[in-house]
Image (tube, rainbow, N blue to C red; front, top):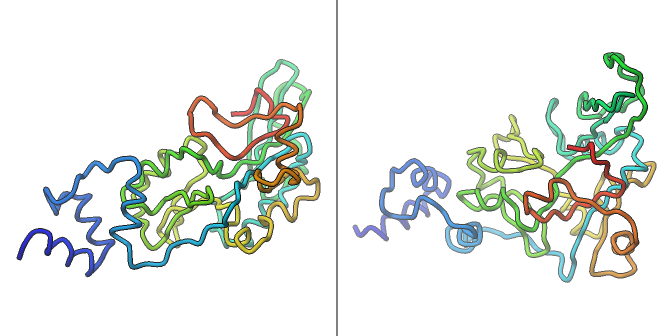
Amino acid sequence: MGELTRIKREIDLDRRAFVKKVLSGAIGGSLLLVFPVGFDRIARSVLFANEDSDQPVAGKNFAFVVDVTNCIGCGVCCQADKSEYEVPDGYYRTWVERYVIDDHDIVFVDSPRGGLDGYSVERTDIPNPARDTFYVPKFCNMCEKSSCVQVCPVGATFRSQDGFVLIDEKRCLACGYCVQACPYSVRFMNPVKKTAEKCTWCYHRVSKGMLPACVSVCPMQARKFGDLNDKDSEVYKLLHEPRVISVLKPEMGNEPSLYYLGLRREVI
């Protein structure tokens, strides 16, 4: 039996097992073990050509905008996300951080239970009087140049044609490379599914013309979502107003599609 025929049989019998053998070196010399940037496209079009692919939302360029000045840390967004996706306890696809600054300009950051229960109770462990408190929601930045996509060895993490960074759970090997590569710490290994997981901006809702769950429930309208190709959309107008617009960790070069209004210099 020729080498190419043997490889094809391995793929046809069990794609996940085949890729695991490649990564472990059991199939030596058959494939490059250091996958190049863009391998996700090869994996999806060659190794997994017979499986269904995601249907893109044509002609859209989605963006998320969070107005930090409007967030009150109520945790309703986290509750909606937890309910929508049945996220295991102790894990969060989105969370809200509380920043407390004392009168000595010392910054204290916490996020008990991911902000799921809100922040009705003030911190009592700060030695000096607090002069300021604000809240910052965190979730997937849906980067154009995603580190997680680049390191995934099997194309389970990929960027769709409409700009969503998604995870194909059927292909995920739970290797953890994407979790380590994300500079925003938005990924985790789901202990129940045994696959990588993160916020998807509610792609299943957006593809049906609906808003992400967290946007729908925010009582302060601190979360905005829309199409940048639509000049009448709220996100387009917000990003073209003469206001300070920021992204997290711009020095990483990931080019996030998650923008913040009123982001403070203390935010990490």
